[in-house]
Image (tube, rainbow, N blue to C red):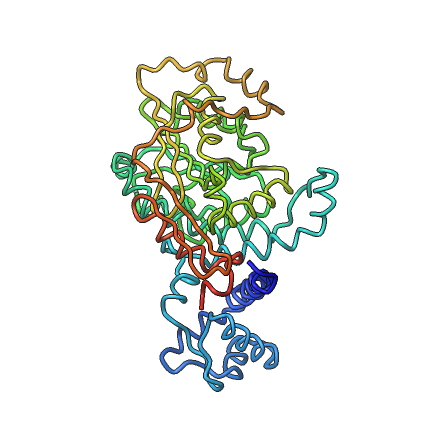
Length: 417
């Protein structure tokens, strides 16, 4: 590439930065929602400002920015919105939902003042403010949709088990939205949530009360490694949460001890790229960016082998691994009635204590994956001018994931024109 081509390529990234902020403001101020509701005629910038209770100059500037980055259409008088863009940004019941990603990306970046110092010294940011946890709740709306629309389709035995009732435990439940969804869809279940972060705990309790489910859903404030219910749950679940635990091995050990004979331990999360080629992709750009934020807060993501190694560190046999069409992955283990698991004994308590501060060792090549669905060879190519990108894999993974990521902050402007 020539220096001019490199300049154009890097300048396009600045365009993506402003596009992310335009999306964030449109979501937080309800601007997208109001423009969508005014279809097909749309709204004038002045009318939009009046409805949103905002300053006219700020909203007219936002409309012109959102139009420049192809989030809304603007003919100089009225703003309208493509329905597909509106669905991806606003419909949090869809696996394609991305609104939470934009909100959490911007809110996370507000904590990055000390990022340079972290890179030099390794000093993490410490406790994140409540705004971050509220943003993560918006982000995980996508994970809830993925679980119900993709996860249960891939695991019909789990769907049948939930339909039959039983006790369900959500570790690090955040605002409790997954628990409410489970209780609503499977009325015979008895869900329990565990959350330590004070603001999230208060929101979870409030959300359960507002949903009229306080008589069925119990929320407790306790750390993920302190779960005093040995062998009492049919399903113990981590939703995009195990990597946020201060000690993931200790939390997974405690969770496994809560699974009753015949019950399941299920982890839904998003994995890091596993090759240099995969890293040079939209997926890689997003995941490595998120990993930097995770390291700054003192936690980390893993690739498939790393998540499997968590199960091995706990002493669980090779977990089943299911790659979902959206790009998320489910790791699961079932506690057989005849299994003689040491986590049922007093040794589990000693093991949890021993896990404190333990580093996770990489799994051997032979341990790296157990797949229920074969995964085709992944290919990703990005041209120097970002004019062509491709990603292929099984079950439509690449197509859906590319569509999702092409709206994300790291996309070059050429990809969304």
